[in-house]
Length: 108
View (cartoon, helix red, strand yellow):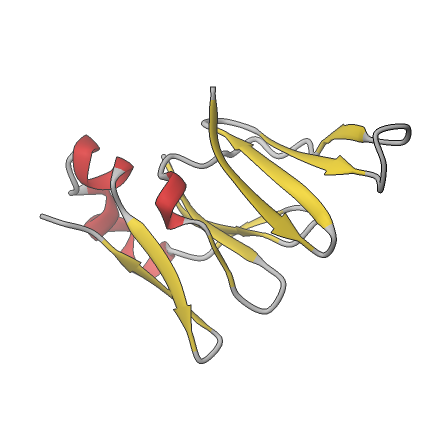
């Protein structure tokens, strides 16, 4: 099941719950789906936000960003807060950016 789709640097990034793919190409003749080999995916579709050409998102293991090459976990400081959220709160989390920063909003 696809959990999110977002553009990044002219490509399309497709998120699944435990995986990330990139759709590369410029026409139907040369489209290619590339596995990013990331072992993390997006839990909350509305949490995806582009900040400085990095897609930030909420996964089951915290907040990560994907830069087209790989993923980086950035939520170590709020790990306990994220783990304390209900499953519904995580799925409906919203992400956004302001002044080159990522913000995650959840309802508790």
